[in-house]
Image (cartoon, rainbow, N blue to C red; front, side, top):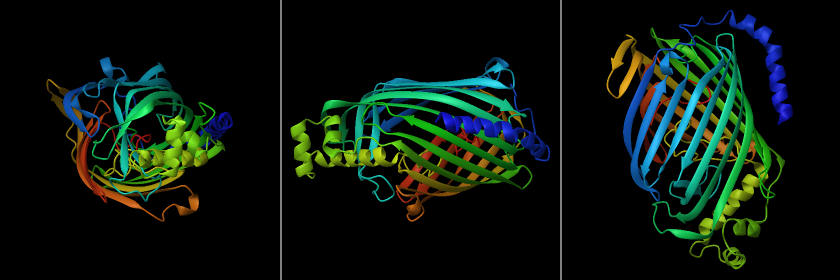
Length: 428
């Protein structure tokens, strides 16, 4: 991993003079890339999750706090899934050049959809919900920004821990306790290189953006693998109408295993909470009550330990009509296109009790996307899933994107309420 980071940093130094020359002939920036227009949002939202429960979330956002570049988010969760999610971004250590960002999650109850198999062949309801009673995540990132944010290099480190105590069926019913709770840990570090040849980093309407990441997944015990994830995302923005754009995105992510993890089925079943006799029983009779879910999870673990896991598809960014992390394997590929029609660019000031910002644009969007994952590179694209949909967005002067959209696909529909553009990690 150190070699990969070193190479990316050297590449950045080498391309800087060329990039300065190249960007000089690119689109001019439409506005200040370090604007300090403040904005905020406070909104309550209910949640219902099968197997997890229900309750309320209080979502708070502050952009360009006190007319600085600092943005902060806080989601306070009450009810059956108590906890909070918080982040702070763009704390500039050197104005316009170097900033820090951080994220912290502390959740007391969570649910993970564990599908019967990795790849593209599992069915919509072919999963179990593994329920946990503890989840923590910490992430710290530092970013060097150059040439009006046209070149940015980031380094990050992230740690997470959690514990699962039971599993349920796809409807959240028939709970079955895990004899020995499963404790999981992960540690990852990485670097991100972004080249932004557009007219605006916040709301691009012409040009292109390249985002490359190198993630190092460390082995946290003798049974876990050690591998790298190399990912690239390229977005092209074609100007249409007077103030709108048609965006095209290609994304590819590949895992490269350095050290394989545990590949022994019985050992993995035992580490997943079963006793030795229970593991033997499940291996001999995999279809009896409770064993099918444990065997499927163990077989997925074997594939992950052998091949690694690329960045998944599904959720708010890619294949939006599918649950978060729906499709995962050693390799993933994605194509997407999105028409962003800015039908109002009046720059009106909106000042309400729960919301305040400058409305730089009201945007209607129409999108289509397609993706595939596989354990072998040669199988990418053999089975694809697609999504399509529409939505409305408000582009705020504070830098936030208030996004509401509906999407449909092979497994039904999803409604999203988010606060950033899709294709995350590329800011737009």
